Image (cartoon, rainbow, N blue to C red; front, side):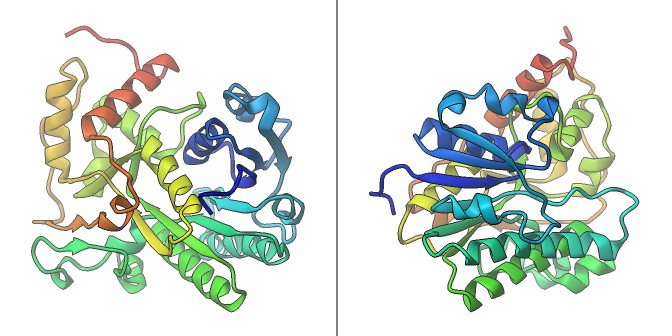
Length: 329
């Protein structure tokens, strides 16, 4: 696949945090990109995509909705590759059943469209490290290094009511089952907590969490506990790498570093002394010592940016978009 000319590829949910960076890097690599969004005419939501280098020549935005069957048929049929990054919009009023059905059926709707395209070469699915790491701590040996063979426990996620984790697990497993039954070349990327600059002035959930931390709000990161972190640019590069590498197979964990929440805030408080970042956080989970084995993606040539670089880039972006006021020590 790496020796083919740059073709047309589809990116679902193209205006999202990760998807926008993927569109940016695909355009820079010479691809023609067909992005799906819920409303191509909503200038506020898509303006940042049209500002990307190469967008006027090689970007097309079309309407598609994850929960409308057949909605992706035309977009997918026009492309040789599909990057499925879109996630259904989950509101606080949604029930657990609605959330899970949206995640699974949204993924299957895209794959049903993929099945109809006989010229489709590969589908790259954006999954999550939550499909790998969520189990009772007592089930992990000390300092375990989790790899792509590990799966989170649906029962454990349900017991602590982490419905996002349940949704991601069920959606990815449904995708693998459908791909196997229908002979679709599927590869999955499993990012950890994604940090970095926003291309859009509107913030997604993870960037809002980072912004909150820099404003001294600690609830989210206290609940996160020990966590993997990765630069958004590395996530975009990982997607393209596994698409272009003919021998890429299965799942790929995309992670730069794993830190306890105390390690993270200590680092950030020292690096950004002008912001009200706490120097420590409550440890509500006890000792956690897991890490991630990223040798599979590193063997394909991906090198990860460090924690300082990803947070520096995020802070500069939040300032530029007016979300974070410059402070003097």
